[in-house]
Image (cartoon, rainbow, N blue to C red; front, side, top):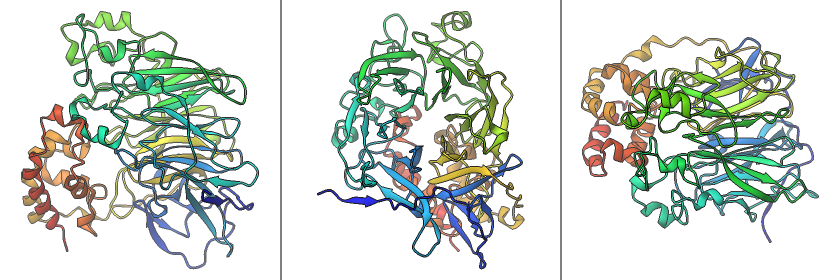
Length: 556
């Protein structure tokens, strides 16, 4: 008999605390310094900047076991279900059930239940819920579904069987066999691995249409199995089994929700992690993550209105009709304007939109009837949540955005750098924000915004010994890391180290610094981009002793 966990009948999701604890304490969760006397609608308030009248509370984080949470949904009963990737690896992921209520002592707490403690999932990412209460989870090989709770008893189903809803996209030459087992995944040559394997999903209001992101296997069609055909076209976006596309699944309009038609809907889309369907009009909106060009201002990210059969330009074109570097001799700016659908809105470069949400709630009037976008990027325009005006059909009407959560840069001992992924409207009108870099579940609610915390000038001091130890690493990080991490785009070693504090460096426990741990585990630079950097496993023999020597200078 399978183990089950029980949700008590007292579930009260996000009940506000009515009294401040008499003996306030300061503690840390997921890098946020939290004062129990300073609350955001019942939760410890995160010290980040927000619009007037809004605040951010920390619902859960690393203390509750989160490492890489990606997206979430909430059931009618109030339970929040969160996909937890567990890392870029085979068979580490799960789905957590999260709820809030009072324990036997009357203390308000967050409860977290692991739904797949032994039967792990591989890279679970997108998650949606149907009217029958079943969860749909996107994995690299299929969209699967399962019933998370027994409808009669309210017990969670632990390690339950999953049913494949659709896996047509996985038959593509770009995915076949790669995720069949841990052995096949680990043995595949790096240059052939899919660079955007995560599956995202969105559904229409009556759950008869589901849209699925199938990301491009490469950054620019320059690597992977089969790239350019004899006519100079990118096979990855042009084939019948298109990757670099959003697929449409038509579901039966009954409780069975069977897939009756599966097609590539829109193509030429590099990676559609930001994907949503307007609840009234059914308009499909996509946030495009553009090419990884070294230019700080290019390419622009995009908001696209998706239509069946249209091509949106990847990998040939970007920004305002500019030709991508790999296609200068095959494509012209005129072809970019004529042959491909144009974005509705351009967003700043390298913002990496990973979450879209049409906000319809009443709790946050500042955001009502606006489109929220989570910018996950680490470069200068990233690490924030913004709002765009939209019309009654959900079409963005202006490229001018309003900052909702901002000032989210790392500040040592105060907060980490923000990295929002999923945005979820909760039943009470608040907004759940997932942060995969810091393992945090955050909640935007109504309340007094956080006070500004001035940086301690003493923390800007870096010893000469530390700077001397980092100098040999400067050319290495500029070459191999700066594309993804803005810290390494700074001009000097001192500026780089200052930017690393509070994010990559843990000064209170240097040996636990992510910069050191990820290098030691050979996770940075990521395997998928090493071929383009001409970085090989043997290069770690040269790099690691230098990184360790640098980390040792931070020891007190």
